[in-house]
Every structure is written in C-alpha cells, then in structure tokens.
Length: 83
Image (cartoon, rainbow, N blue to C red; front, side):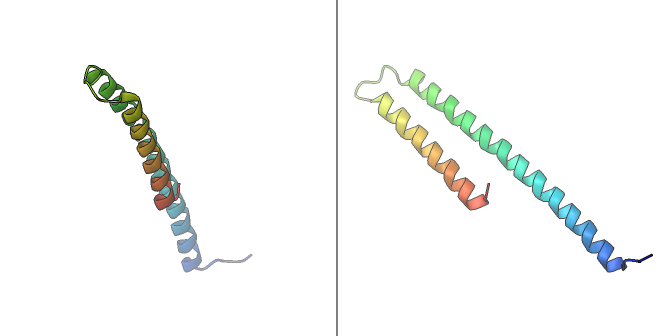
C-alpha cells in the first residue's frame, strides 16, 4: 500500500480545476463567437433594408466587404485566443 503526499494530491486537484476552468472559458468564447456572427448577419440585413433607396450606394459591394471583415475578425480572434 502506497501513500501519496499531500502536495501530490493538491497538485492533481489543482490540475483538474484548471482543466475545468479552461474548458468553461473555451466553451463560452465559442458561444460569443457564434453570437458575434449572428449579430453581423442581422446588422448586414438591416443595413440592406435601411439604405436600399440610397442613390450611389452599391449595397452588394458593401455587404460583401462587411461580411469579409467579420470573417477576418473571427479568424484573427481564433488566432489570438487559440480557438
């Protein structure tokens, strides 16, 4: 029968807590990313509706640019935060 030291048990408990915290943070960041993309889509639709009668405004080009910037922001966030 082997006995483990209190320091060994403490460190394993801390590792388990760190893993749980890390998982919780990553899941919440994933939710916020999905929310961000949903908001971008809604804003894009609203802008198309609001500015549809504005002369000289190319809504298709604006919409494509807006969506591309949202995608680039998502990729940058994934690279920075490691998701």
